[in-house]
Image (cartoon, rainbow, N blue to C red):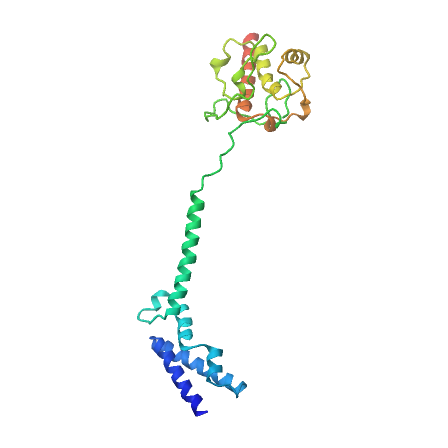
Length: 253
């Protein structure tokens, strides 16, 4: 028993040496003594090696204490090799994470799809021959379009567009100068016809059926403007409707 007491005194002394904070020296050794006594009361046959195996070596105990302290609390404390090994592991993990994050940030973004591009196959929309889209669009909007002509054709007597650019370019007043109200109405419905909308009015229906490019497949009640038409087309439908009304009014006057 005396041998164990001597070994324990040396054990506590070595722990105190590892910790320069005097307040913590006392707290740690006092707590440890209490735990050791409780352990010995439950395990009276235990020897010093059992205690070390249960509670750790002086180096392990001090390293545990140091690892639990903030950096500013460690001034003047002797750091053991085990602590430096643990610190190195932390730096490796943090460094690897930082490199992965930087590499991910530098990866090129996947290309975005062209804005407002609408294919003939992918679009359904609702309008009467004489009405514009259900969502009002201002003809004075100035945003730039990033569009291409989705409906290029070779112009012949039975294969042409009144306004070929109306599917991808914002129309201006100069684009429709000299057009009659009837021509403006057909040009407006030409935007719908490109997408395969069927027509009810006989004159409109006959006109587009003479065009080789026209393939009517969508009933008027199933045609939803906001789903079928791109933004340039929605604006142009509204613009042509306004110009058509102005042409009608000026002819009446």
